[in-house]
Length: 375
Image (cartoon, rainbow, N blue to C red; front, side):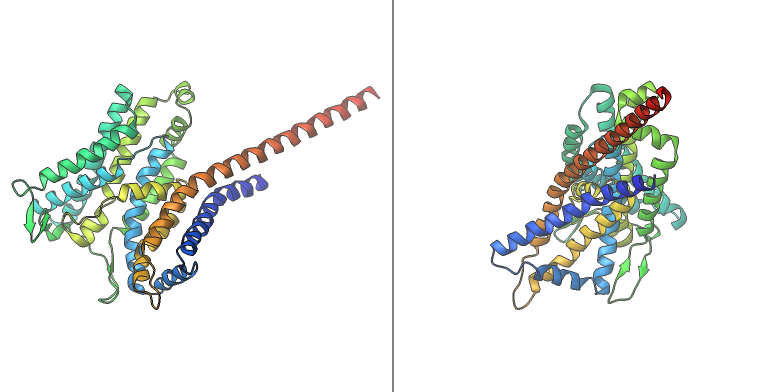
């Protein structure tokens, strides 16, 4: 058992490590081909981690990535590809901002209400894809991609000045939210910045994700259905119900992913609100192997590449394009698919050899026993 655990841990770590190494090597090749030093960009970015303000930016950005990646991972564990996390997150943030700007309750009621609005909006939007999946057999990949586009149009319509939009200069916003809905963070000083208060929400969601999947009957049914709907149905699990429930939960978590920024910093939804978070979360969930700890490390890595890379533009005497970090992120996603498949095949071969050796040993033992009996 001890040997098996060690091998399983090795297989779990091997995929991400190989992906990172491959991405670094390929990025270095790109730098060499462009006549640049292949090591200097990494040094420059690592230096940024020593600055407290960059550390705060990384932690804040990682909290958004982490929650969104958990939403993606929930779908993956169910063998569902929820590409609609980006639309669910943006629509939920916009609706939360609208409600927060027009409803004023005491803080102890306002903040939970806004969290509930974000959760329910994301769950509702993902639920549409879930209904189409279980009733009409529509692939969630197709439906969620289309729902992303529809969400963009719905946001555009609701933020018109004739509806809930408020024009601020050249930017269209939903108006500033009531202060009772602002979530205070951890202020580390004017020169450092403030860690979002809802960073702790990300931590709680990660713990809840692990507990539900690994310590509850629902989590077992969800994983079993993702592995084989036929086998799950034979054991009494309603596969369609599990698919729909998984889409609702995934969408609900996605709806929370923009709230650390919304309630902790911007306090309004505007055209400048970050987009593409859901697509980034797919790469993070893949790199983290749908494990809450692995996803946390992947989210920090992605946030580090995002927040440390601008320093490359201002490097002296030779400046590097900050797009190097984007290239690395893309290569990580590309490499992670290949490395995981390679590790999986290697693991299967190891398992087959081990089973073969055990069978051979058992057969040899039986033969020896028969000889002893015959003697």
